[in-house]
Image 1: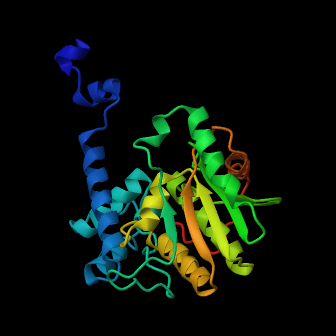
Image 2: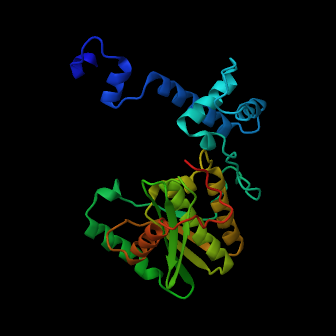
Image 3: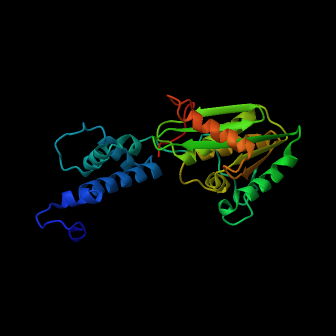
Length: 283
């Protein structure tokens, strides 16, 4: 690093790190400690050791070091400004969610694109294929939802869904991820569908990651969001509604997706979140 910067021998390492835009050793140690604590609290929230870690935050900040490494872990999270994220509430499944038995058929269908790397194809071709899928679904016994989520660099995010003339949008809590915004949009549409079910429901999203996560048998992250979504899917199944989740390309001129995208972007700039009793854990 000294040779690359052509720095004199007396230049301090901290100065060269700042010149290169690299974190200091102390910062990296703090980051590793905070990450390890966050992972443990998220995966084993009810363990005795997790209780000790949370207890470490009860010690006032900027207190003289006492040699207790649990307190040092809490101080590391505070130094990085991520203490609230590290000690957030555990991400648990909703009470009404029960994992399905092994090999049990799904109560919904996820329809993924048949093409490999679909986003790399020409927009005109993707639009034509999407419209060909959507056109036959317009009938009185079917309801179509288009969902989208938006997350900006300023930490603000929003979700929205549209269905015919209906449009609803939600401003999410600070620092929610784009993936969480996509899941909330799907969850909001399913909640509306449960209030007024029809025989056949089709939801269109441009988030392949959301579809893959919902199609999985177990949840590792965003457990409360995913389990709540599955609970709504099960409710619709019990109401004799067939639910289909489709992928639709973004920004190719599909009207429903464009409307949902615009609504999500617009609501992400709202002054405060409007998501009720949020199951969103900040990223």
